[in-house]
Length: 201
Length: 201
DNA sequence: TGTACATCAGTGAACGCGCGTTCACTGATGTAC
DNA sequence: TGTACATCAGTGAACGCGCGTTCACTGATGTAC
Image (tube, rainbow over all chains, first blue to last red; front, side, top):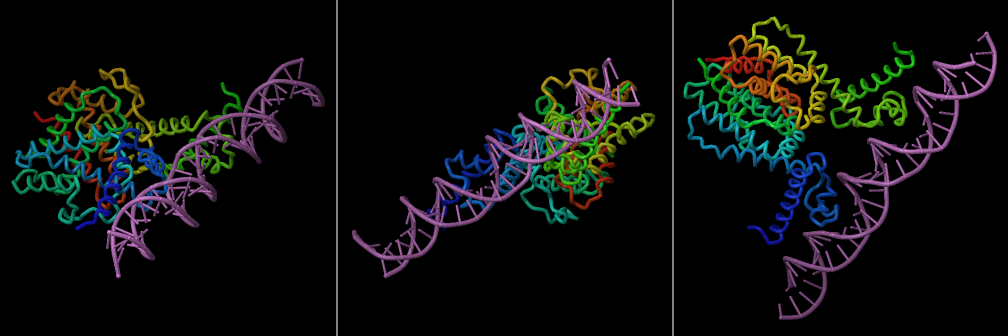
């Protein structure tokens, strides 16, 4: 049970986060500053320190929220699809998110690095709210069904799938951002081709 | 014929560029400043304006030099290899460069975006000193040999290959930077698998 | 070869800017009795 | 229900910092005759 005060506090916190995200989306990943966030909310810069201890904390929260949204987009893909289609659709969801939120996507990966010990040796001890986890689970489903058995460990296979979609996403969000090219079609074919390659006997 | 003065001028310019690259390599992509470059060369900050008109010009030159190095690494791969091996080796050269120069690689792609009109409609009018061009040429060689004919236009196919290696490179240079994982092995398998998928009948 | 002059390479100080953060403060909101 | 007090939410001014860039300048290098 939370008091009205606590709820208002949380709402303001969310408003700060939303403002930060909106600014990244509109003005680009590198233009974020406490002062501009405060200005957008008609706050004084000092006021934000009631809700976050530092700029770093805001960045972390923004990244974490972005990760949640990305994973949610991937979780929209029905797991009931045949494995091949499921993998392709998962990848396209990832890239579509990046295409729709290019600056946000770039920001997320510019400001986060997995600490040295965090990569799991096995596929079990993974955080639940992670795109990579979703991918790994799909790959393991395929392996248990007897598919994808020739392409290395589930970690390796999931990594290579991730690399492909992350490359498409990154290129479209940054370097090829303004290039008129039918990426959606090319991405689909690439994913299909790759998954077919992984599944070959 | 260049005068000694011109040659010294050029040497100093190169020294500035080298210092900038070294700083990116050592301190990371976002720490670059005119003042620090000058300090490293025992110059006053104002002195750099004899050689570059702005910080932007230095960044451009640094990116351009990085691109040259990357392309050179790719051109080391003997084109005489069988196509499949050649494509795999090209991709691995790209990723290896990124792994060996993670901050430089990240810097290059953070600070460059292809302008709207620059993506070629066909594969001809491409700049010669570009990794993408090398890739396209390899793909077209394959198509002329009757391979790779089922995987879309040469542009599409080259793009998807690029996306895969760029994803591996980007992940290893940033997000997964400190993760202890045998990327070289995984990358090799992924490349082989992908190329095989592209070549399937 | 010597001299007068022009150009070059680099300095030092200053400019204005936006930034994250701190701090003493104040009015508003909530709580206890 | 009223009052005294504690906590909360937010302000305004200031801090020191590093930044890119400009500008008047000066000694060194090169050139012309």
